[in-house]
Image (tube, rainbow, N blue to C red; front, side):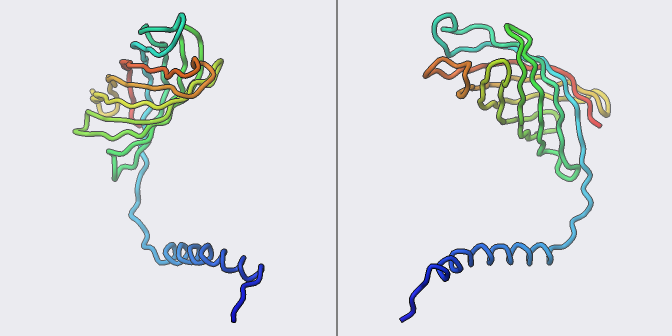
Length: 181
């Protein structure tokens, strides 16, 4: 009868890993070379404000949301310009100063309209982390300059700036300018 020893058991457990690695190497070496793709970029500056809710005490009810400025960069590949990735630096200007970041996936429709979803967070002086989604109108007025306007909803559900058991939500309007390079 065949018995597995501790050393042979370890070899059998690593066998699927080596098989997957060998398959990946084989597929990489036999893949055809893709056509040249050129990356494209845009820079954006936007302002955002609206309403928010989800708190207790002085923060109970609906009130004007935190106003922030957004400085962003968006990238895509020229062969697939409808799928884009954006990264933003967020600067809260009222009611308190704060700094954060946002990462988005954007899908462009009919050249001027887009929908997006992403993760967002404020990291200083207090922390808030959550998700955001929305849509926008982004027409170009020249070959490279245009505007961005649209609503966004955000839900913050992690962070030390949240009351226990509450989720902060925001419904905002964002507007700004963009330059494509």
